[in-house]
Length: 221
Image 1 (cartoon, helix red, strand yellow):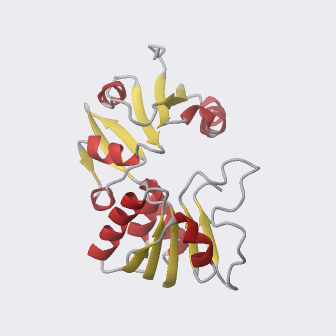
Image 2 (cartoon, rainbow, N blue to C red):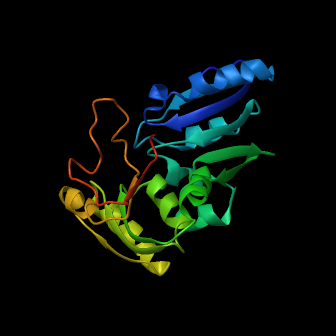
């Protein structure tokens, strides 16, 4: 990856980072500010050897990087320092280069706290069990009575349920095919999957009718 020597770099790292809208949103802002910052996608396929990515982020021209699927858990483990919330969730979506090291943060947690941690949610359906789902669980850990977790990978879903249990949250794991039925009873549905990224995608929970008063929080919207 070639980087201009005099450009201060920011990246978004993910398996399909080049499809994100973020550079088109932020680069005009940086241009208007005249700060010379340049925000670029950095595609890192799932299963890649990640040491070159960490090494690249320590380049003196780099300020920071957003991290998206499927590398949020890697970001937490690769950092030299992290917030308490990152340590608890095991996921980070922001790495900041700081004096030759990487500091990890999770802005997903802050966003969910601000929007949803104003009341108790009786039954939360978590669609997906990756970094975004972990962030939501941490943000709402004192505001959830019961959680149901589903993911295409049942083992990953069970790992997230184990975290919920350690935090004192009652919950279950269900097969992805059961999500539609669970959604009819949930007071809060959190979509932490890529479903909804494209206009032709349907709702992540299927075509079922949700209960009156239920709320949907979609990480992609």
